[in-house]
Image 1: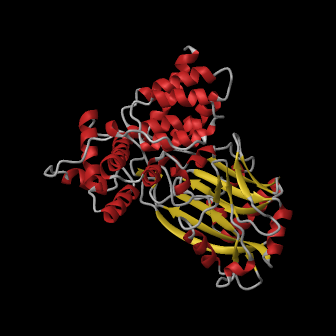
Image 2: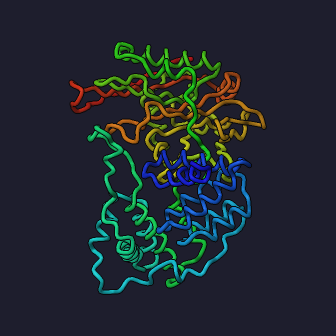
Image 3: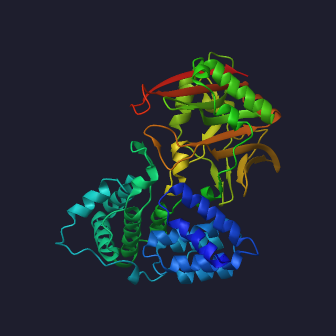
Length: 476
C-alpha cells in the first residue's frame, strides 16, 4: 500500500461505530498531523473524508483531531472549506481550534424549513424520544427550548430526522452484533447511522431556529455543543499502556477475593510500593474468571479520627457524579477546586476527590461513563492542582511542579461487556506521599482509604450473573 492509501484507511476508521475506536483514531490522526513526514498525507486524507460525509454530525468527528494537533491555520481553513454539511457545532469547533470568535453563517441551506403543520410525525417523535439510538439529553434540551419559547422544537427535530432518513435511504444500522462476537448477552454503546441522523437533525433544528424563529446565536451555539462527539478536553486523554503492576492486581483469584479486606489492603500496598505514591482513587478489575468477576474501587478521604462510615463515604463520592466537576483551563487541562476542612461540616470525613466528568458528555467519552475517574481536590498547600493530558500520559501538577499521576488504560478490552459490569478499562490517580500528607495536614486529619468490592458470580459458563457488594476502610 502507498502512504496515501494507509492514511485513507486510517482516517476511514473514524467511521467505525465503536466510541473507543473513534477516540484512538482521532488521537492517531492528530499525531500524524503533527509529524512533518506524515502531516500533508493525513491532511489530504482527512479533508477528503470530511468532504464525503453526508451528515452534519459525521463532519464533527473529522474536526476532532484538530482539537489535539498543534493548530495550523491553513489546515483548519482547508477542513472548513471541505465540509459539505456545515452546522453550528462545526463552526463552534473551528472557533475552539483557532481560538477566535464564532463567525455567524447564513443558515438557509442548513435546515429544511419549518415542518408542515398537518404532517404526521408521531412515528419519528416516538423513535427519538425512545432514546434507543440517541441519549435522552437531546430530547430534554429541545423540551426545555420548546417550553421556554412555545415553538415546536421537538416536531421540527422529527421533521428533519424524517427528511434525512429519506435522503440517506438507510433503514437500519446494519449488524452491530458483529462486534459482540459470541457474547450475545453483552451490552455496549455503538454510534451508527441512526445516531448520526438524530444528532444531525438536532443541529438542523437549531439552524432553523436561528433563521426562522430568531433564536439568539449565543443560545443556539450553547445548545449545539451537546452534539460534540466529546467535550474537547477529553479527546486529549489517551488510553495508556498498562502499568507494570497491572498484571498483578488484575489477576487475583477467587480465593483472594474471599477476604475482601485483605484483598483491598494487598492491592493498595502493592501499587503504592511499586510506584512510591499514595493512591487517591483507583478502579479496576481484580478477578476475571469464567464464573467469577470482581471489581475493586478505592477512594481516599481525610478522617479526623472518628469512626469512618465507608458506605457513606463511597455513596457521597458516587453522588457527586454529574453534580461536581473540575474547572477547565481552556481545553488544555482540568483544575480542581480548593477545599477546606470546614467545607464538610455535616460529614464524618473530608472528601478529597472530584469526578472527572461533568454534566456535558459526548459519545466518545463512553468509557469514562462506564468507569468514572476522579482527580484530587486542591488545598491551601497544594493550590490549583491540575490534571494535564499529554500525548503518552497525564500528570497532576501544582505550583508548576509535577506532584502525581493519572493513569487510564484498557484491560482485556472488548467493545462490549456483560450487563451491569464496568467497562473493560482501569484508572488510578495518585500523588507523591509528601503531597498527600500536605493535603491531610491542611484538612486537619489523616488520609484513609475506603473501598468497595463488587462481585459477579454464576453457576455455569453460560448462566445469568448475580452481584454482591462489600465495603470497608483501610487506615494508612
